[in-house]
Image 1 (tube, rainbow, N blue to C red):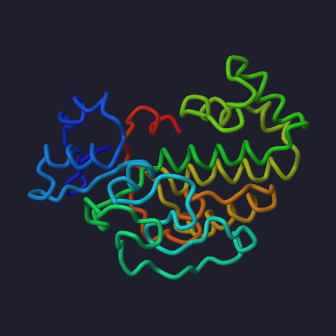
Image 2: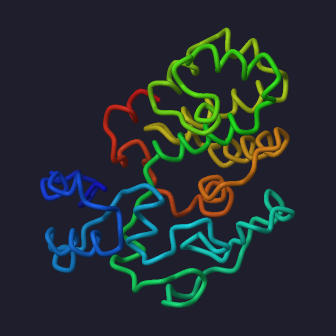
Length: 248
């Protein structure tokens, strides 16, 4: 979790002492007390798990896991079809998978581009044909990653390697290659420091190609489809991991 004020990053010294704390609602409440959140109303940047904790939402794979709308994560027949879902009118405890009172203001939350990129890459790998050359090339490129983990776990440096690997591009089938090129384009023209004038078309192109690949819609993909206006204007300045964000 990163603290921001007027676009500037603040030293997160209290968070260093929280390295061994359990990620829980109670821990987040304690942490916010230590940094005097109620007094300063910091802007917070964190991954979706942290955001869910801060907003008092249930962490498991729930039906209503979006904190902005009533997107039904189980209604797969309407994923990539229905972009407009009823907006949440409140985060009321006991309703729509909210289990605790929110600890922070919704308008003070940023989603970091790094975690969106990682999520998109994981969905891409999950959607690949596991018997085709592209996936087998990925498997051979990272031999120390188990068969189970390579389908879902990637970190910034691994994604960077693949993004600059021409052989990987060539080994993908046509559907996968188009989706992969679209992923690289969205990293350049939307999720980085530069936001292209046609970024909405860039995002829509990725969604169309991910659907063609058979990628399941995740919460991060849902944000791109339905909540582009929630993401900060300059995504490249908002991240909780300096080094990895700069490498993508």
